[in-house]
Length: 200
Image (cartoon, rainbow, N blue to C red; front, top):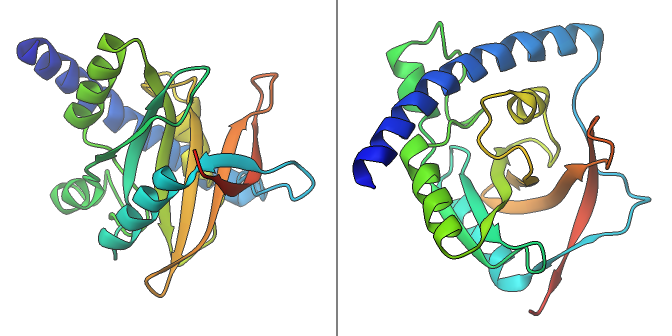
C-alpha cells in the first residue's frame, strides 16, 4: 500500500501544480470581472457541527498561525462529522522553491500535502467512510470561499469533488467566524451557511 500511495501522491502533486496555476488564472479573471467569492447567506439555516470537531478545528487554525491550516473531516452520509484529520499546508515551501509558479505563501493560500490526504482517503475507505469535508482557515480576512478556493474545488484534479467545505476566519490569534459551504444542489455553485455547534 505504501508504494501505491507514493505513486498516487506523485501524480497528485503534478495535478496539484496544474490546479494551482489554473486557480491563479481563474482568480485573476474573476477579480477583474468583479466575480467570484461566495459569502454566507444569513437567510439560510445554520449547519450543525459537533462541538468536539469545531474545537479541534479552531485549535488547528490558531496553532498554524501566521499560516492557513488545512485538513479533512471523515464521515458517512448518515454521520458526516466523525473525525477531523489535520494535513500539512505546503504552500510556503512551494512558494520558496518557485515564487513565479506559486506567488502566494501559506499565509494567503493552502496546498494540502498529497500524501497526507491520500492516506486519509485510503483509511476512510477501509472503514466504509469517506472524506466529507475539506477545511482550511483564512488569516486576517473573513470566512468565505475565495475565487481560488472555488477554482480548486472545480478543478478536474481536485481529489474530493463531492466534499463540503468549512472555512475558519482568524483575527488577532482568535477565531472570528466559521462558515460551511456546500453545492447548491444543481452542481453549479456553492451556498454558504453559518455554523452552530451540537453536543454530539
